[in-house]
Image (tube, helix red, strand yellow):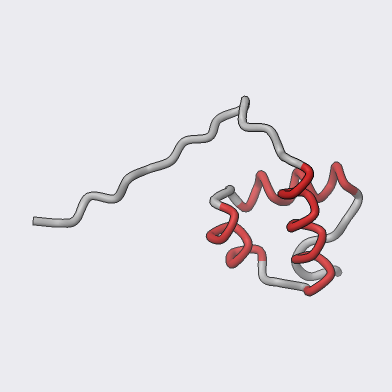
Amino acid sequence: MAKKIKQVRRGRGFAWTKQMEAELRRHSKARTPVAKISKEMKRTIAALRQQAFKLGIGLGHQR
C-alpha cells in the first residue's frame, strides 16, 4: 500500500512573519532556485513570487 503524505494547507490567512520575509530576502540575494525555496519554506512558487513582488525583490532568473 502506498504511503500517505500529510498535506499542509495554509490558505489565505497564513501571514508572512518578519523572519520568513528575511529568509526570502536571503534566498533572493543568494539566487536560490525557486523550487528549492518552495520546498524549504513549504509555500507555493506563486506565493513566493507574489511576496517577493510585494517586497520589491527578485526571485529566479531575470530576463
